[in-house]
Length: 262
Image 1 (cartoon, rainbow, N blue to C red):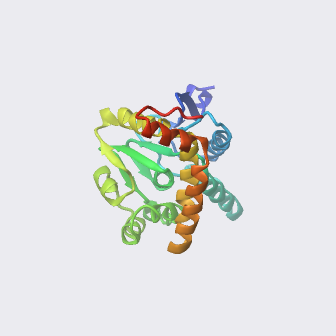
Image 2 (image 1 turned 90 degrees about the vertical axis):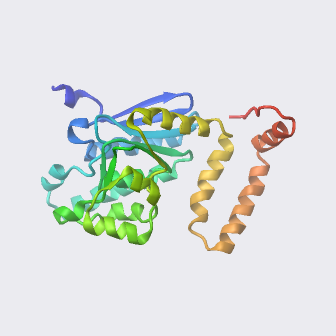
Image 3 (image 1 turned 30 degrees about the vertical axis):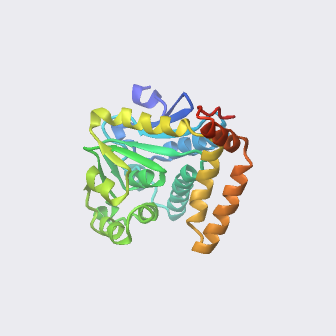
């Protein structure tokens, strides 16, 4: 068995409250094969139940983040049912990232195209190397990036998402940051440090407040203004009943560092 075939498709490394998931198919541009999607779905499910995880980093081995679906694998099975099941699984993975109770940071280098760009858009935060490039380029091979457009259009304006989806053009990291697809673009040599700082800032916060906050943040976006405020007010009141809220406020008033329960 070759080295490439014997290595895990997805690596996990846990350190100081942060779980890093690393796509590990660099020779195939970390394409989202069936097996890699299955591995991602399984690991997302495990992290959802792991109270020791306070933040997740989604990274990739090699020079590129992710080139989207594995087109060779897809062409080998020209069957409607197969394609429907494949895209349904991919959609579950994307939604699973957002449903995780802790923030997910995409660490992006090289290209993030099609479903790879969708992965970035599905994370809560994203930091990219200045040399990274992004596209939903399926239109170039006659396949409109329908599912990637769902995530993309929830990150950037409708006209910008439409432009990318219908021209298949690449945008650079500076443009991606300006448009809101990523949070920041940094020199490639500084990428790991930038991601580590962001993760550390999250891990330093109350675990209860972070979990409550992530769940609330996405729920309120689905509501109209009045309902969003009613929901948010109830969430905030219940958050005040958490032990961490009392500890945090007492620590602030006492001018000391808080001691989070988590």
